[in-house]
Structures are given as structure tokens and as C-alpha cells.
Image (cartoon, rainbow, N blue to C red; front, side, top):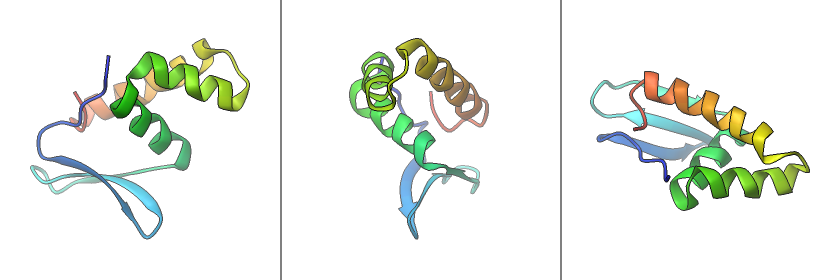
Length: 83
């Protein structure tokens, strides 16, 4: 399943930092480097493939990465930045 940004939400890089911005609310949400990579991969290839790729990069089990993905997605869904 691929991640989709909520309508009116953009993911952009500002001064080297990745930021989600909601034009609906005017809110912005900064992402650290790992969270930004997770989100970008989730959008591009879907959660399962993204977890597999990152697990290989970090030499950990995909289930560990998937737990981090789930936490990030819960936070972003609650903020209405992804769906």
C-alpha cells in the first residue's frame, strides 16, 4: 500500500530540511532525515517495499522498520497530513 499525502498537503525541502505543509490549515510539520526517507519511500514504492529497503540499508529486520513506519503514519494521519 502506497502512502498518499492528504489533499492540500505538500512535502518540500526548505533549507535542507524536509517539511510537510498543509495549505488547508497553514500548519507545517518538520521531519528528521529518517522520517523523511520513510515517507518518500512510502509514497514511491509503498510501505512494505520501503520497510524492506530501509531494513537492508540499516541492517535490521523489516519488522523493526515497519514498527517505526506505523508510528510515523499514525502521527501523520492524526495531523491529517497523510491518508
